[in-house]
Amino acid sequence: MRTLKRILLALVVLLILAAVGFIAIGLIFPKITYKSEVVINKPVDKVWEYYVDEGKMAERIDGFLKIEPISGSRNKPGDKSRLSFDRDGHQIVMTETITEYKEQKTFAFRLENEVITDDARVTFKAAEGKTIVSQEDTIVGGNILWRSLFAVLRSSMKSNVEKLLLNLKTNLEQTP
Image (cartoon, rainbow, N blue to C red; front, side, top):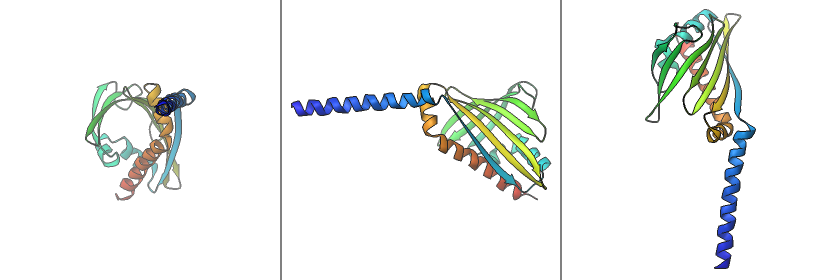
């Protein structure tokens, strides 16, 4: 009986240490940043036109459902929209605020909801008839648990952005 109590106590202590360790990750890494890049065999004007076309968002973003304007002038800093996505049968709604818009050069935005804030900056650079598209994301979780989880899942989140950029490349290169 005494041995069982010691084992249970040890398990409780280990669980507490694991929880404290997990929370510490969010304190040590309150935000995460990553950068992804793709080269598209199309000129920058065609890539830009496709990227900013709201009607094409469902083609390049898996699970995208709709975009609804909230306020501001379209494609100007301060422009706010509500984006809806389907993830495994669950609808996720996020608010997008454009933070920078320079035609054929930069599209920066903040995507946020109660779980996450993602400040993304997408740049477009012409290179010998091709376009280099780079996206840098800075992610902050809505609370300490989300921050810890996002720090642990950083590589998975970066992979998702790389997949989005590859979808962009594939869709553009398949069109004449």
